[in-house]
Image (cartoon, rainbow, N blue to C red; front, top):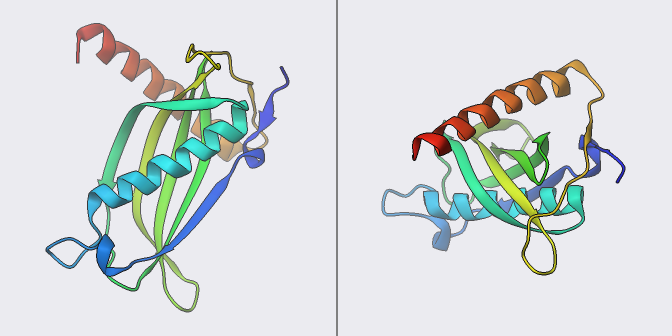
Length: 156
């Protein structure tokens, strides 16, 4: 199994916010954004491993800014870290104005596990790190992996 580049699986999704996406405070409904983030992360992970995947964890889901009806929302997902059967995916969400300028709405980290046809976890390809930014994200992903592992042992 050959290692893959981060650029091999980067995924971008674009949405225009419609009335059905808005909550009672006239902002993007958080649950709708979580659904889109999960879909983007799943596509990234599937492209990386070539298998179906399941979401095992969602970390650090913080909203930095609101998004409103008729805004253009851009979600960009990329692999940041891989284990034996799991992959960490970062999804950045932006509001894009009509001039193309983007403002950060959210950054989320998700862990997805590759599954074979029987639903059993399967080994994933390694990750080729091509620059200092990717190496730094890998190291941060490794620390997040260790924190998640410690929380599992503690029973959280």
